[in-house]
Image (cartoon, rainbow, N blue to C red; front, side):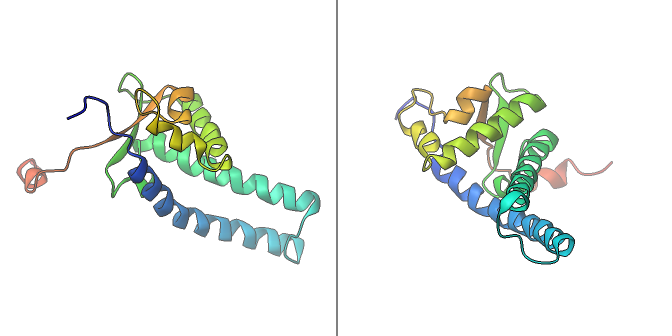
Length: 152
């Protein structure tokens, strides 16, 4: 058995897929607001650029606020994934925004920043390294554990 950590690449991709759906809902709300304000669908020009930037901001707020609040987005919860600082603590807001930004670049480069984890000695992605954060997989909860430590 290898002492190298797992890449978690498959879990990361599944979490991204799950996170696409709440983001899509938020983007629909934003697009509706743009359509109502503009009177027609936005097709380009400065309004199209503004809409794109708003969509990026929504995605960034969704990710960074989720990570700050509990270390997980909605898509990370079923797979028991959590973002932590390199020392295992809670990462700062600046580090989380850096993680998001470099993660966007990783995706924009055909996922190269994610695939990098296969070759990295610590199995880290570009955004893990750049932001000094890590993605960990939490152990399975033991059945009945919550019931035993229930309300007093």
